[in-house]
Image (cartoon, rainbow, N blue to C red; front, side, top):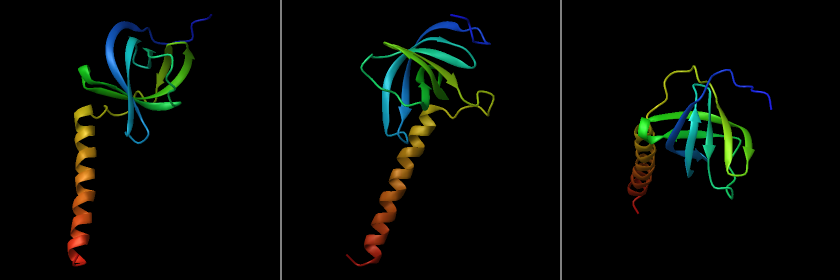
Length: 118
């Protein structure tokens, strides 16, 4: 098989999360090698992952938009989308933003309930 990568990859053993479905679904995986443009992921052979998702690396506080490039048994290759774009938002801030959005929706519902006199 001919090598199609333009960037060399560094071996790694990083725990990561595949996040999808508007950040409502996630699964753990292991990054076996990584470059500025993509990575090779090790995951359970039974799982199905979407064609595009967010790859979060909590230990490094980094997150990438990733596209599935290939899949064999329990490993997959992904290409990072827009890898030259602005730096990714740290995972902690993403989680906090989701919590605040949920809290805001609950408060709006409560204000509406109180305004209607219930």
